[in-house]
Structure formats: C-alpha cells, structure tokens
Amino acid sequence: MKAVLLKKTGSPEEFKDNILTEDVFVPCIKEDEVLINIKFAALNHRDVWIAKGDYPKINLPVILGSDCAGLVHSKGSAVTAFNTGDEVIINPGFNWGTSESFQSKDFKILGMPDNGTLAEFVAVNQSYVYNKPSHLNFLQSSGIPLTGVTAYRALFKKADLKNDDNILIPGIGGGVSSSALVFAVSIGANVFVTSGSEDKIKKAVTLGAKGGVNYKNDNWDKEILEMSGNNINVVIDGEGGDTFSKCIELINYGGRIVCYGSTSGKTGSIPMARLFWKQLKIFGSTMGSPDDFAEMIKFINANKIIPVIDEIFPLENISEAFLRMNYGKQFGKIVVAVSS
Image (cartoon, rainbow, N blue to C red; front, side):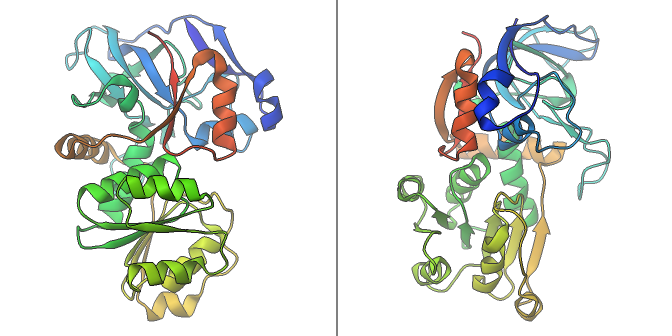
C-alpha cells in the first residue's frame, strides 16, 4: 500500500526529503481490530511538530496522521460492531483511562508512536471506530476527529458554553479554532475572533462570526471589547503567549477561559489581581474521552455540522501540505486524498 513515512526529523526546508510516500506492507489485523481502507486523511499541527522534531518520544520511521475517513475493508473474528463496507471514522485518542476529568498516563494519539492514517490502510481496535455522519462525505468527515473532539470538550465540557454567551476565539484558522467556531455558531452563541489575516477574519464572518480584529494591532483587545459591547464571557484559546494575558484582562467578571494549546509560546506574565478579583475560571483541555467523542458525533449529526475544509492535496504532494500548515496559511482542515 502507499503510505507517508517520516524517516527523520528536520526543518521545513527538509520536509521534501524527510516526508516520503512509499510502498509498505498492509497491516495485519488482530481479532478485535478492523482494517480500514482510508479515502481521505487530514493533517494536524501535531504532525508538523513531529516532522520538525518538536514532540516528545519520537520513534522513527513512522506513518504520520491521526484523522481519516474510509471503509471497513475487513475485520477480525471478534469484531461484531462493524461490517465490511461500513463508512467510518476513527477516534485517534487511545487509552484515555477511567476518569472523565483527565487522560491516563498510557494515553497516546494515533500517528506517533503507532502508525497513523496517511496510508491506504490502517488497523484499529473496533472500540475506536465510529460510523461516519451520514450527511457528510468522506472528504468532510476526515476533518472531524482530533480537532472536533478537542473543540467539543473545550466548549461544552469545560466552558459549559450556552447560546447567550459571547465567546472569543483568538487566532482563528486552525482546525480546532475553526471547529469551535462552527460548533458555537450552531447553538446561537455570539462568536468573535482574532487573526493576523484580514482574509481569515472575513472567512470567519461568512461562517457566522459576529466580527473579528487583527491581532497585529496593538490595541486589538480594546477593539474586541468595543465590538462585543464590553461583553466577552468565554475564551477558547490555543495561542497562549501574550494573548492569554490579554484575555484575562478583557474577559468579564466570572468569565471562563479554556486553553487547549500554546502556539505563541510561553505566557510572559499573568495579571494575578485580575484573575482572583474577577473570580475567573481557567481550564486546561486536551483531546477528549470516548464519551466526549461519541457526544461530539451526536452533536454533529443533530446540528448537521459541516467541518471547514481548507485545501486538498494528493498523497504524492504531501510535503506541500505540511508546508502550508507549518506557515499557517490554512483556514480549516488540510486534507489529503489517499485512495480513490
């Protein structure tokens, strides 16, 4: 089968030499596994961080990728939940553990260290396989898993988002932020965004955001407050850095802030007086439990959510897809056409 192999890590300039499409053996399945013929796979920032060597416990060579949609090709003798030909997606978070509050020490994500979804076939335990939403095609469905469950948990399990909330999503454009946007809009929440790109702000508005500002402006936080009527009570942040500090300054008393990433790096200073005087609630969030994933699928089905897709690349041009993500050019999910 064709698969994308990462053989060594390096700079973006080395992606073309390090991330290669090659022929490898089709994986053998165990009795409790299904073999999925992948139609489309989608990239995550995690894949780029691994390719650059900015990720713990890298074990090479590896087939990258965590997201996909495809067909059940065959199944082990103990598999009862699926049949050959079923249209499916995968929950890429393995071994969550027994607590809904946090993942276990054995938690891992498909695509490192285990071989992932940038291949024509992948073997997965049946417990991580779910029926594809019927209103979505394979292309759209491939953009759901990792970013979808991350956004769902952050919005509804941590921030307890309601339809009358005013929510700020800094750095709109990535998979999680675009998922959070369409999820929040679907329940009627008022969404505001920031971006360094005017085009991305305009795109967010077409998807239902009430407005947005350019974070390159020194006073972007004041612009957001004016735009929202001085009323931001939820922040879903994957930026970190100085953005996180400004969000503490601008959010309402009793506000909820959820952090799921730190693409802008470490936060230099936290205004502690604001934190305790405003009685803020701050949550960390990573991926989601099996219950979160199942609920997320139900939510997508009930609200007829359509994931935001950025650009589609053939498997042979995989290094170009990685470069697009590395330089932050995307809005939504970068998808790879794996097999016809």
